[in-house]
Image 1 (cartoon, one colour):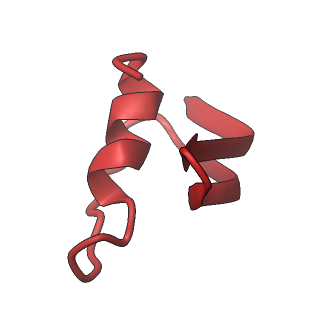
Image 2: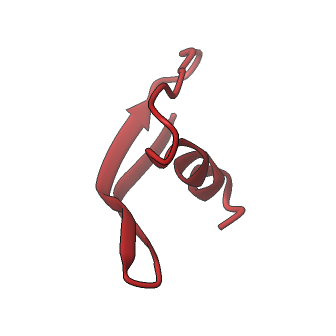
Image 3: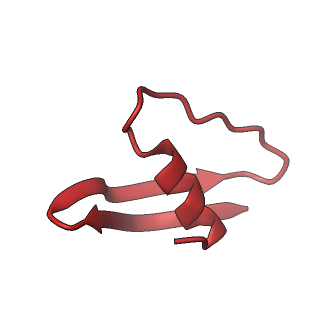
Length: 51
């Protein structure tokens, strides 16, 4: 299981992720879908510990 709770990310004064909660069950397949600038890459990088 992968989970994150109340994750927030700011770049300067710009709030890009605000109190995000996600839980993925073992063996699940997940897709992040959204417009440019929605925070998809930032969220994935935070889950992976890159940022």
